[in-house]
Amino acid sequence: MSRLIVVSNRVSIPKARGAAGSQGGLAVALGSALRERRGIWFGWSGEETKKFSGHLDMQKNHGVTTATIDLEPQDVEEYYNGYANRTLWPLFHYRIDLAEYESGFGKGYERVNQRFADSLGPLIDPEDVVWVHDYHLIPLGERLRARGNKNRIGFFLHIPWPPRNLLVALPFHERLVQTMLAYDLIGFQDEESVDSFLGYCRKELQADVADDGTVTYDGRSVKVAAFPIGLDYDEFLEGGESGVSRQAEQRMRSSSRYRKVIIGVDRLDYSKGLPERFDALGRFFDTYPERVKETLYVQIAPPSRQDVATYQRIRNTLEQKAGQINGERSEVDMVPIRYVNRGYSRQELFGIYRSAHVGLVTPLRDGMNLVAKEYIAAQDPDDPGVLVLSRFAGAAEQLNLDGEGALLINPYSMEETSEAIRAAIDMPLEERKARWEKLNEVVRTTTVERWRENFVEALSA
Ligand code: GDG
Image (tube, rainbow, N blue to C red; front, side, top):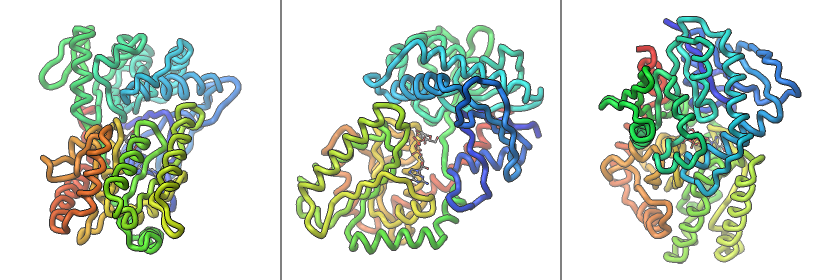
């Protein structure tokens, strides 16, 4: 079996399976593939150094070799906070109004991708299969090719690929997409992204696009397909068996005094549609005032990317909205919203999801959204809750199930979201069970291991 080299912006140092506070499904799935194939996980250490030296920090943890490099402060500012998080992230999430572009960002992005290629290149053996992850590293494949690398190299994008008409607003968009065509396989989360990408190649680059998703351009071919990511289902369920999980569930049930709990769990990010969600809840409480006492909305929102100003602004907006909803509707012994700016362990999250009657997942755009799948996996089969899901999450392609799975909503419509919350709260047990069984079947069978196997198999073929 050929060796697998995984490359991502940051490297998650592998822990033992099921270890306390253990990592997410991605780290677990990639970790087990790397163990099997004696591979290497390469990326940025998260540390800064005054002068880039290219020094590799190689470590072996639980059978997985990691190799990391430090970056200069200017690299971090231009490549990570700049081009990745202030240019590509907003644009790819359809927030052209928030996308900023400075030529320094573009230069920093190119420079860091070159640094990655130069440090990683010597580690790659001729038979290795290389798998590059996410928007930070789009040009890496081409940079490796320029060093003479002839390996199979694949790329997976965890976030949405935008429609052609949005992408053309990015300066030097042709160059970005042309570099991407240096890969052998490009994977997206959903068919919509695949269609957008192929449409761009056809219309902007006049590339040849075959029915099976093969793009031929400038003498080489790359296969493009959807590989929807999933959960490490077994590991997640095992965590749910733990005392920590049971306690978290019990704490939620007793502290909510048996009100109907609606749960939201999101990184504090403008793509997750949180202000719109808070407004929809306000609408729900206004439309059904008798429900205020019977309902509790819990929003867990750990802060992220706090070096970027838009992330500070969204935090202020949400504090204001939560304060207003609670100020207007609380009683001395009851608040309608609990808004929590911190993270919980995965075991605790399991218990919290399980205690909730409604899972509210309403991103304005999302590559996949794993919270939707975790909410389903955590439910009690005898008394499952209802998933209310944005049609703009990649997960909607899998979880709509012809209207028999999640309740799909348009997150820009307060009415639609508010009505879906009401329908979810009032849904009879029979229907909840029927929907949950179908949803759980999808989540149980399209796991992160399947995703990884499908991708690596297609890449190695
Ligand atoms: C990107 C794409 C795509 C959240 N709060 C806590 C916590 N989380 C965990 C969730 C979930 C993960 O973080 C978030 O994953 P999402 O998929 O919802 O979103 P992104 O972070 O934006 O991820 C996304 C994903 O990549 C994978 O390809 O699905 O579309 O944007 O697992 O549970 N985990 C813990 N405590 C928290 O408080 N432990």
